[in-house]
Image (cartoon, rainbow, N blue to C red; front, top):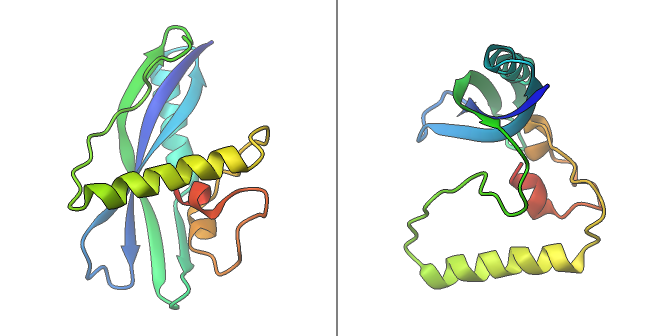
Length: 142
């Protein structure tokens, strides 16, 4: 069995979709004997997680699975290996750095021996508060 890193892409449509197009790109670990099997499993995950619900503003929200845009075989797990990188361009560098430092502090201040709750799209937009053991910021990033 091999491990693969798959990028699953969803389109998020709120209401009539009269907004800037939104896409959620998720990196997922997928086990498979072959690349083809891992690809099919990742596609199945995306299809199963398509969802339609109403947000806090009572607007219809649709998470539509688009496809798998990237698939990488992980030959071995190496401490410190880079799994993901994205360059950000921000108008306000100080605000961005402050936010990153706040998130880091949140990680340190909370118990780190708990598994994060992997929120579904519905949970991310739910009117219910997130579980107490997981900081809200963490839920927003899964």
